Image 1 (cartoon, rainbow, N blue to C red):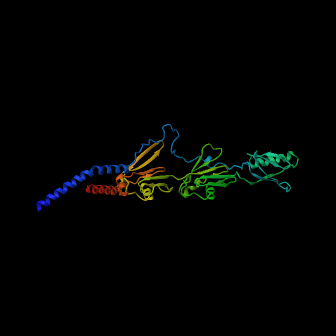
Image 2 (spheres, helix red, strand yellow):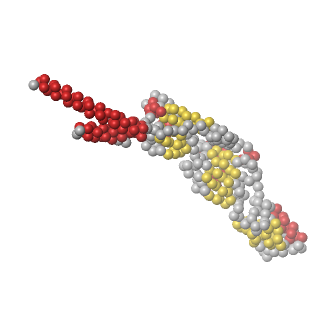
Image 3 (cartoon, rainbow, N blue to C red):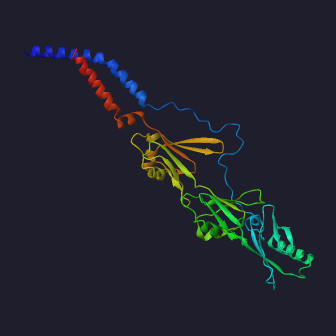
Length: 345
């Protein structure tokens, strides 16, 4: 009896072996195809910007330090097209006409006619009107004053992360103008640029983060200036993080790899923790630094400090992605179906 049971067991084993041989090749083919499907796509090697590019990429910004540019002497208001003027003569109430500077830069005044005032300061315009009144024989020594009733061009334009047009007559301080515009949002950089007519190079101002030292950055601004508030630097998070996107760099503290990973929701199960890459562009050169973030999290490796425009890439493991997505479960299910199907034959 025992001999017969052993004989049957060996027969069953042989039958199973033959059936497994029949499904082994199809099963291996399915597994290979699935792994190819879950595997990473072909990646082209990026060699950086074209060699023929002559302009520097990510050029460093140097704050302006010349006191003659930062703190120029006070200057009179320059009359421009669209300005509405009211002319007064001291001691005379019968002469107070109002006129607007036309597109050709002239104004039409009683007893004088048409005068070209565009580009003149208020004092120059007052002297010219007084001379014309004397030459016309209307007054002997008139003391003329001009009141600037409307000045649509006497403004400072703020653009970038802050959009506003602030009226300025004469001059105002930079902090006052920014406050009128609503202040700086969290996405605004503390290094701003002022484009001023007559100055070939932009004026770069570092507002800093220390209130005790901010007085040096509160420079005067004048009508016609354009204040450009750029966006703060960001770090780009890509790959097997729970949340991808751009992480802004705070102005008052450095941003480390662990902080960026935390802001991205942490690393995903499918990520290659030993193959994280920090991609940094310096000038025309692109550098790739590989970091084992598992060692950083365990305190066995230093936490690197990131810079603006860094790209943090955490590659995806094909096998872990297949396990997380149910890929291996699908393969096992297909293999079981093949085994069951061959048993019927």
